[in-house]
Length: 344
Image 1 (cartoon, rainbow, N blue to C red):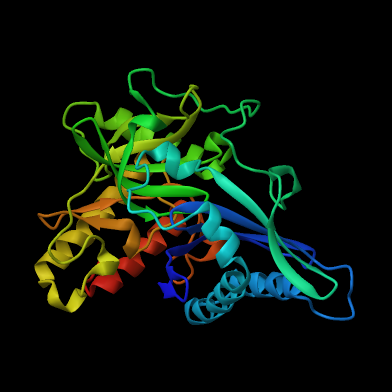
Image 2 (image 1 turned 90 degrees about the vertical axis):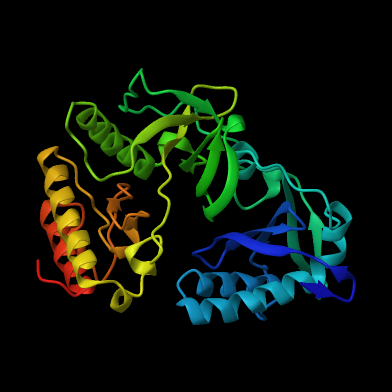
């Protein structure tokens, strides 16, 4: 985007809100990571600018897509109205490409600022990290105790050696297409590592599937686990590497497809493969969990692969009371079959 001071590039990365006392918003400004802290003003007789931003951030985290865009536009206008000049001093628009390794993506250098109203005048100014709303995330906590046992024969790769080609999901964790050596793979990683229970759950499931597929003649339609990602400079696991599935001409997932344009025999084969794969997972004691069309990848030969074993559920596909259960998986399969327009 461009303003009177020239071109700038801004992208909101995350919002931390939920009460009326404080909040923060993290964004990239000309490829530099900035976190703006907001503390409620002591004067409760009027809504100062920081109070308004806290309110907007609280609204944004529960808004639907249309409302979210309108709210974040307001947030952007307020922040840029005050912060464009101080931010541009530390983050001028650069023509050089930012670092593309996973470590720099997950743990970027972050500049902390605060917005505060004093004597009726609002301003944005730099603060120390210990003055911010949120404690800076510098990596996984080495004191965290976990029962997770990695498989010794599965290789480990430093986050510095995982090179990001395309970011698919960003925030406190990431899903991205990466290159490791000469191989293209998909990476899922969390800043806090195994302290994140969803990462541990997915790794346990992927290891169980990996062990099963190591036996002759066993081929389960789940992208194969190829490695663990470790925090640079330590052995702490923060993510996984698995097969990158080249997409079908109809779309990369069932959700992306125009189902009406896909031949019925292809849709029937996809449905049968999903049913077969879920049954195989259940025989291994693995629950798919968040079964839905966006978690079914379709390859170039129009065969399906199930992804996302981190747990959870999605309204409309699995009932909350059936989340993370065999019955929940079976419900998801029935609904996906209906979505595909074929009989189970």
